[in-house]
Image (tube, helix red, strand yellow):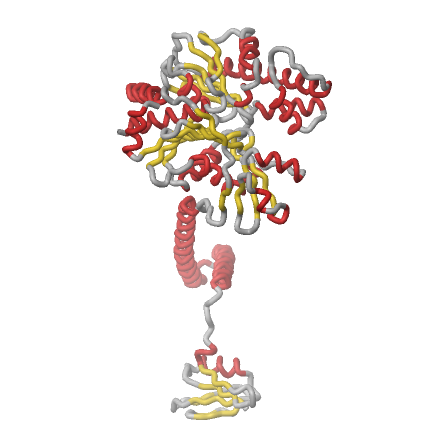
Length: 346
Length: 189
């Protein structure tokens, strides 16, 4: 952001925020800071008898009045292994988890930490919500309202924005916000078709990163956590993988098949939904921009191009590209939207 | 000993089990059932009396107020009301059947019954309205419940350390993007 714009916002005492509420990560971009903050959306509940406070000096945790401890962020994984426990995830399949309703207070603290200082300023925030899933009957209403309540409790003015539309706001400026944004997250794949800033179609599917891990794990008789760990460490979808361990090679092979199946499923759904629901005449070629943690392994975009080339598309495609930073694209797009809204208010 | 005391003059009292007496009087009623004494006095319209017990350890003075029938059980009252209504309905059916054979002799009786049923129906209508009003009130309470969603309470919770990592980004384009989006949105609206 240029200095003039920054000082204008500072002068007004206004801060704009983009908050990406993802299943795996919470990401926050602020108008008054060049750093985007990311935290893992997981925590580990422990009893204070299990661990000495002095052992927690290097890590982030929430301490409750009744001796309950919640290790939050990526440290939760480390301590989950030590204590042989499973981490708790406030979100599941892109939405607030029905199993972790009691975690809303912890989630609020995590978001509070991520947002930083908003007390002394007039804060405006756009937060991400998924679209209704076409293959699962869960409503997004509860999810949307819980995040609204969290932001309200922190004294922030808020608006919910579709996650895939945020990708268009962030990555399709050259096309004047025309394009197809796809976010391959952990819990869901979100798709938005936008034409000149207008949302023409949004939908989501409940197949994304977690689906790949679970299916690969089920195929090989393994625990999904182990598959996730191998995926994050070694996965690449192009070129030779220099791994000698046979079992790991098997896991990577299964992961490749399920990545391909995921892309194929998503492309078919895009074509189907576009044909059924898009009324506007898209008379120019539009790009597909891919983002989200699941799209990060090397070769994902090439695999996507390969799969989509086998289909006749109902729109003219200019190019397929990856977001500049797949982890922060949604938060940046949300920040663009917030700043645009605030400008529109003046 | 239990004594009945009536101070008002000029009454001639007959209570079963006790010789009749004139008031003012103080009469030993130890061997008579107290409810019987009270109901007899009530029948005779005597409301000012005292029943005094001077038995050791059980000393007490009871007056008419202590024997007043309270209507504290509205459910029971409602049951009685329902019963009365049902009984009257049954009676009506019987009378209407009778009416076919003996209309003239029962005319007065039927009119009386009809009047009392009419009265009861009116009462019942009022009660229905009352219940409906009550129901509407409870709906209002439900509507208000949204404002009673508990606030997120972070009072007892404190966060130590920083679990987030940061990614440095060049945000030079963001303001231009926001400008463009704002212009496009405004031109569309």
